[in-house]
Image (cartoon, rainbow, N blue to C red; front, side, top):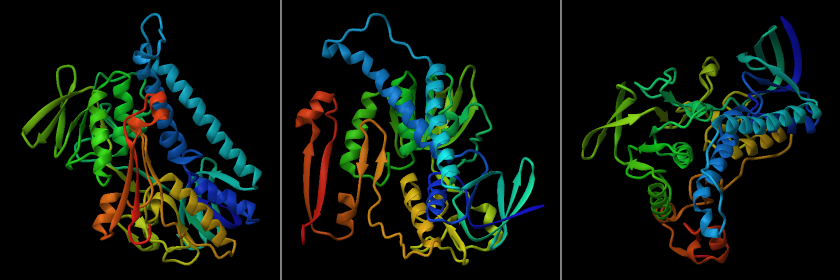
Length: 402
């Protein structure tokens, strides 16, 4: 077995891992990065970036039917070529992932494609297409991300059932789409497909979509979902599905009793789970599958760090990138800490939603006396000129000190 020595090794080349490796290289730390599947991770290849490309295309396509209001006429009927759209999306992904590979190389980071395991602290064994490599390194950063949760009775191996990855690779527009899970991924992809012609039904167990978001925001979103032709069934549980004569049938239990929903495809978006099972042998402290870390991203074992979705905290790409930069500074011996008080969150629905800090209902629940300022986009000249008058800006202040 070939043996190599580095000062640091990063496992996972997603939006946490590759910034960590690049920063380590910039700081003069001899670094290798190991990636099992694709440079850029889920985010660049089958997540954030391709989904935004399709969402952007869906938005433009849906606007065509209303351009006459602006005095713009397009002769003939608009059509969508999903093959060409996928080709365009793939081009964006290729450019970005290629750019990440170039940045790693430019910063003297060795990229190793293969599957990693950690036999013991200070060692990483990599199984590559050409054999095994044993890497010795004082510092090991685990950045292996997360994957979609699969629910009983809805196996992703079945052609009818889609996770977000399969949904982003559709070569046609499903006539009937059932989305199980009314979180941000389900609403983003469901809205996009509704805009290009799918009849979309969202099944959500809780009493609102996007659980945890400001009720004022959800009111605006619910109205727009209805306008976009998306049916939302709240307090509803998916029981299972079966093949019908021409379509699948999804059986659900609603507050008014059982219903059978026709579906050409069924999209499961009930959350993601951390990819942490492969390090169980180390005995790292974990919480619900997430590796527990401190403010310097250190785990319970010296010399091993964790960042991004696999670590404790919110599962967002920009959080992973921030942690990647911090962990590199820590490994280089600098006094860096993850002291972020606020992590912005964005949902690419229609309208788009962005929040930073405590939302109004969260601040009130925490006992704060508040001052709340609210400005509706309906009276904004800029919003009117963009035909984007749904929604508002809300600012929440602590009344004690503004």
